Amino acid sequence: MPPRGSLASAFCTGLQVDGTMHGTTNPLPLTLDGISVTIGGAPAPILAVADDGGYQQINFEVPQEAGQNRGGTWTVTVSQDGTQLSAQVTSSQSPGDFFLVGSNLAAFQHASDYSLVTEQNPAHPGEVLVGYLTGLPTTDAAVPTGEASPFSPLAVVLQPNDPTSVHQFALLLNGTVIANPCAADYGPCQVSSLLWLGLAPGLVGVYQLNFVVPATASSGNAAVQLQESNCAVFFGAYCQSGGFFIPNASRGCFSYYQGSVCTGSAVPLPIR
Image 1 (cartoon, helix red, strand yellow):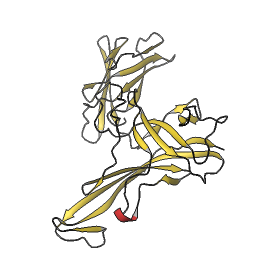
Image 2: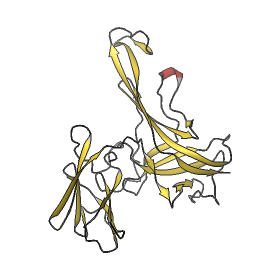
Image 3: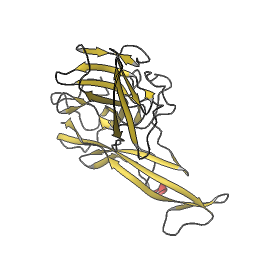
Image 4: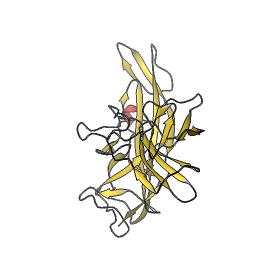
């Protein structure tokens, strides 16, 4: 299960769905074709329900109000006409997942004209691209459950770099960081050089990432991945030996330790 505010899908059998139905209101409906979903006791806005032949699919937003169980699991309950089915779902460990277009290409656009990046219309070294994904943390400020992200002010994924919190994203191209969140003056974590990261305006649960293709990028189908780093910082009266620290007259010194780093699945990006 992705974080609150992101999109997820449930696959079921035994539901009565007539073809495909879409939620068209803002905020999204909590019931569609008689089907409702709760995550951690909170009702989930529904984007669509569909019958795919042998099973039914429900696309929904994980509500901001969803509560997790101990151990990081979520209780997911699907209901229709008095019938309920519940399951325990674990939290996703991915920093975010790019949407796929068709069977083998990720959802990237050329920032110059918003045309889709394809084999026939590839990305070029040095240009700005826009990627779409879900599964990232909530934004500042959080967009209310089920509502489309506003155009103003934009809902930005904060990447704080202060004495109490360091939470950063980087972008990898063929395993090499191209939008680097690191700098020597702040130890292992620093403000990311991604151009922009936040919720795509006018959409629900869809995040947008703007970045520059390196001028040195080689021609071919490159592998793009999102990477997330977490660092924790501690204050103390004395400087910790072996750690990075900055003296501070009022608070002594602080030192950090490097937290977890996780990398999402690679998606293809045609570059020519």
